[in-house]
Each structure stands twice: as structure tokens, then as C-alpha cells.
Amino acid sequence: MPSKERTKLAVVLTNLRERAGLSRSQLAKKIGVSSSYLSMLENATGQNPKSPSLEILRQLYHSLSKSRQTDAFDLIQAILETDELAPSVMPYGGLSEEAQRQLKADVREVWIISDLLGENVYDGLFEATYNNILKRSVSYVYFLPFGSDQWPGLIERFRRKKKISKEQLERCVTCIECTPLMFLARIALFNPRDKTAHGTITLGSMGNYTFFQLEKEQIESIYKTLLVPLQSLTTAKTDKALPKSISLPSGRFELVFPK
Image 1 (cartoon, rainbow, N blue to C red):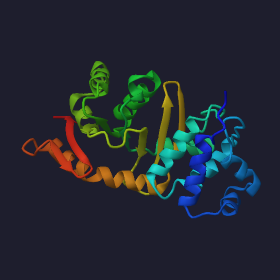
Image 2: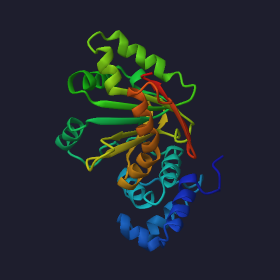
Image 3: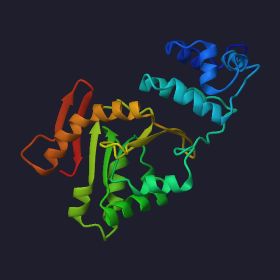
Image 4: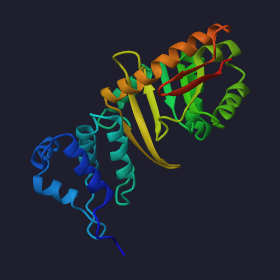
């Protein structure tokens, strides 16, 4: 029997709106809906669920998830737990196909933060990664939790391909294992060091993913967290005399590849 309690999405929307210091009418104006419609969303129950359109979800995400990275996680998880919402918000939502193509063509560096590597699951993604390394020398940095079985599978796939030399693989690919501090989702950052930086966050079960674009402030926050260990271990990558691990207040980081 459906619950009389408010849905998780309703509770999260109310909490994030109040945390942002917005009245219901102020938020409604920002996302282009009436106050009564927003009230209906915030008071939805299991017996009377109300699901916003995907466009309104995008507006809510961009309006309410800028202050803290955890706000974005809270909102996306609430969306995923709402059965009526189809997980079809695309990573480049709102961009033309040409703009998407240009963004992808301009990528020179990719950081992946995940406990599951899509390259091990989807052959098309692996082939795209492989060709980016082989033909364009795109740099990939993988951050994985300690004890993950994802890296051995991926490095074996790389090695079975004969065209990438050992030297090119070690130059273009870095793998760092770390304390599981950010593995609530798969995060991809593209060109994180410059003004073309963009990124996506992915949540959901296998074959049922939802993608959202990361805001600039969220990319900067993630980048700053990982910059120190990355710089330290990248130096250790080329100087075998330097330690291959570093401990910070945010956790421990260890260079796995290349050693």
C-alpha cells in the first residue's frame, strides 16, 4: 500500500530549497513554474506522487546543487529512487550534436573517479579510450578505491592491443588507488586544468544510468581535492626514488600504474 509519507524527492527538494535560503516563490520563479506547482512537488506522498518533467529536473539540479557537492548527490539519489522518473537526462543535455562533437574532439585529458570502469563493461567505450590514446595521446587518470578489481582487467585489455607501446601506455595512463572518499558515483572530468573543463556525474545500476553535467564550482572542488596527490604521484611516476603513496586529511593515495 502506498505510503502517506512524503516522497524522498519531495523531502530533498524542500531541504535543499531551505538550505539555499530560497522561498518557494523565489525558487518557482527561477525554474519557471508556479508556486502552487512547486508546493505540489514538495508535498507529494507515496499515495499521491508527483513527478516533474525532465526539463524541470534539470532546472532544479542547476538551481539547488551549486552550493555543495553533497547537495548534487542528494538530489540525484532522490531522483533515482523515484520510480516514475525515467533515467534519461543526458550528459550534454541542451547542446547541439555539433557542440557535443566539438567538446569531445577538444578533450586532451580525462580524470575518471569510480569503483566501476565503463571501459570494462562497454566495448565501444573501451575502443574510444584506446583510440584516444593511440591516435591523439589523450591522457587518462583513473582514481579507484583500494582493493578494486577494475584496474587489472583494464590494463590487461590495453596490453592485448598490440599497437600501443609500453612507453605510450605509461606516458598516457595513470592509475591511483585511494581511500573511498568519492565513490558515490562515477565522475568524469574532461580537461580539468583549463577553461574548457567540463564533467559528468553518473548514478544508477547497470544499464539504468542517469547522467548530469557537473557545475563549474563542483568541478573545481573535485579538482582541488585530487590536485595535490596527482601532482605528487605524477612526479613519482617518472622518478623511481620518490614514494609511490601520499597521505592527506582527505585520505591515502597510492600510485598503481605505472610503477
